[in-house]
Length: 83
Image 1 (cartoon, helix red, strand yellow):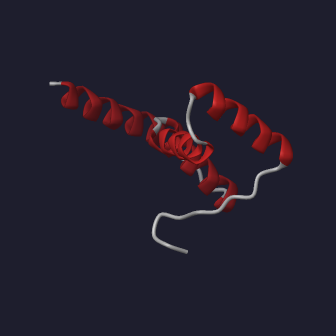
Image 2 (tube, one colour):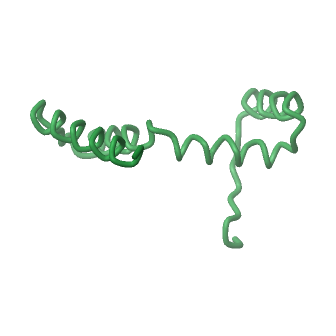
Image 3 (cartoon, helix red, strand yellow):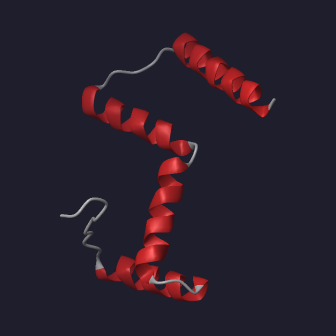
């Protein structure tokens, strides 16, 4: 597989919906799918999904205090970047 190349097998319904959405957006299916994946990975939820996957795998979790400290740190980082 070449760098950056990825092959996905989609069920028929998902492939049909993807083709319809790409057509409605006026884009090639491959470009549209790549854009969806990229935006999904860059979204604010990416970290949360990674943490959930880690919990599902290990059962380890963050206490309320740890979660609040994490939230506070992330909030401070975002506020600092706005300046």
